[in-house]
Image 1 (cartoon, rainbow, N blue to C red):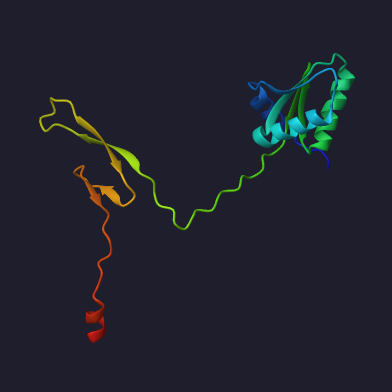
Image 2 (image 1 turned 30 degrees about the vertical axis):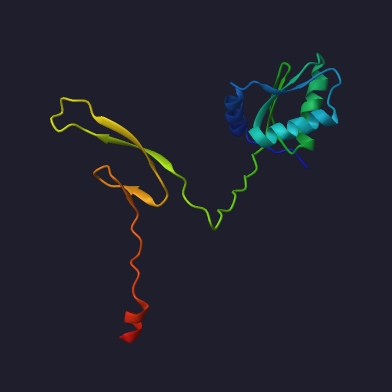
Length: 159
């Protein structure tokens, strides 16, 4: 998989976004291992834009690590400054769970505020739990939702 190629303007925008980030993965004395690569892949999946700190003092080694990570993980190398490497990969779309057929709306806690008629007193605040088959009227009362009216089977067939 080739690394993602970005325009300089896109790379500049990603550098600005990564400025406040802390390193998510740290590469120690063992260098780039399979476990480190897997951890960087997981971080890219969950964050998209990450910083990686390399503890090595060899600049050429750090550049090689950046190139290897970008190539293996199909990511864009954004920046290499000091011992920090910045990588970006678009985050995958998350699958939404399909709603269940028997799902009902959950109870909600609603705050009802009644103001005083004179305006001098404090408003009355009451918290009420509203179930799925209930609604709050304009006056602040809780009522059941209206059901469709049932018609008689006998009357409809006689017509």
